[in-house]
Image 1: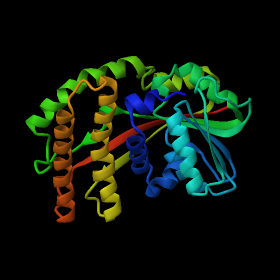
Image 2: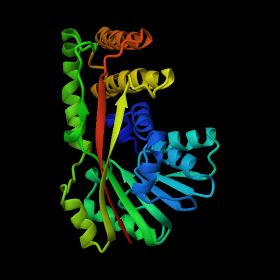
Image 3: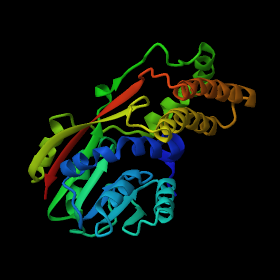
Length: 298
C-alpha cells in the first residue's frame, strides 16, 4: 500500500475539490480540443489522483469512450473507483500503478494525459513511457500548473488569519517542509525544455498551449452550491486537512487544546467568509491558475 501523497502532501478531499473546481463544464470544449480527445477513444490519465478529471472526461465523451486512471496512491485509487461505481460510470476504470512503469502493454491507448505530475518524475523517462503505451498516431498531453503565474486577489474585506492562528500554526511548519523535501521531488525541464524533450523523443505535431482556470467565489455563473464548494470544501478543508496531516506526522506532540483552538480559529475565519456569501456581499477574492499544456503525437 502506498499512501504517501494522500497522508503527507495532499488529502483526498482537498485534491478532489480543487480538481473538480478547476475542470469546470464550461471549459469542456476548450479542454477536449487542446488535449485532442474525442468520443470513442481509449484514454489513459496517469497520476489521476481522486479521479475527478477522469470522471469529467467520462461524462463529456460518453460510454463509447474508455478511460483508465492510474495512480500510485492506494487511497486515491480506492476513492476514485468507489466514486465511479456510485456514479455508475461503466466506461471508467482505475488501477494502482507507477507512472514510470505503467502496467499496460505497448500500443494500449489512443491518448495519454497527465496533470501536475511531470514535475514530480524524471521528464524524459515519463514521456518515453507515455509514448510506449500509445498507439501510432496517439497524442500524449502533459499539463502542469505554473505556480508563479497564478493571479490571486486579496481584498481588504477577506477574513485574514489572526496572529493567534499564525502562532498556533508555527509548530506544524517544519513537518510540512520536511514532508515536501522527502516526498515532493522536482523534475522541471523549463518552459522551453519540455517541448525540446518531446522533440528529442521523436514526437510529431508538438503543440504548446495554456489555459486559465479561475476559481472565483463571487462569479455570477456560480450557484450557491458551487460557492459553498469553494469556501467550505476547498478553502476551509485545505487548512483542516493540513492540520490532520501535521498531527499524524507529529505523533501527538501537541496537546488537544492547541489543536482544537487552531481548528476553531480556522472555522471562525471561514464562517465569516461564508456569511458574506449568504449576505450577498461580493468582495472578489479569487485565484486564477495558469496551466501549461505540451503535447505531441507518437
